[in-house]
Image (tube, rainbow, N blue to C red; front, side, top):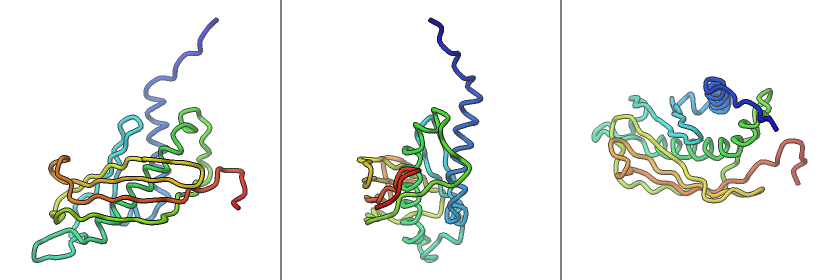
Length: 168
């Protein structure tokens, strides 16, 4: 019995990068805020590069709470879509001809733990549960020290129906 030869590493990496660019490129708010994603295998880290437009209180100065919350929500949505897409992408079944339906926010709670400083911010999301209809995600954001997050969020999302099915 012969096994098929594994794909070269550069082919796998380029496919993963193309899928991530396709996923994030379809969300205009990601470009507006300047959010970038660093991918290591199946793990994503969101990066919010500092920009003066993100400052809410120039006297402190501190990141605007709305910008922080949007950063956390986008991180959660992209992580959830990425984990949903991962198996199909790895098997070469992902259809990148049309943008996938994205999860819809049901509720979103942010804990502002301290002021976001005028510097780059990072975030990671963890999918706690992802079913056919509902998903629960936790996100944390930090700046200089991952052990000292400045904001955390808990989000619940309505999952889109799988491609080819009719929504109820």
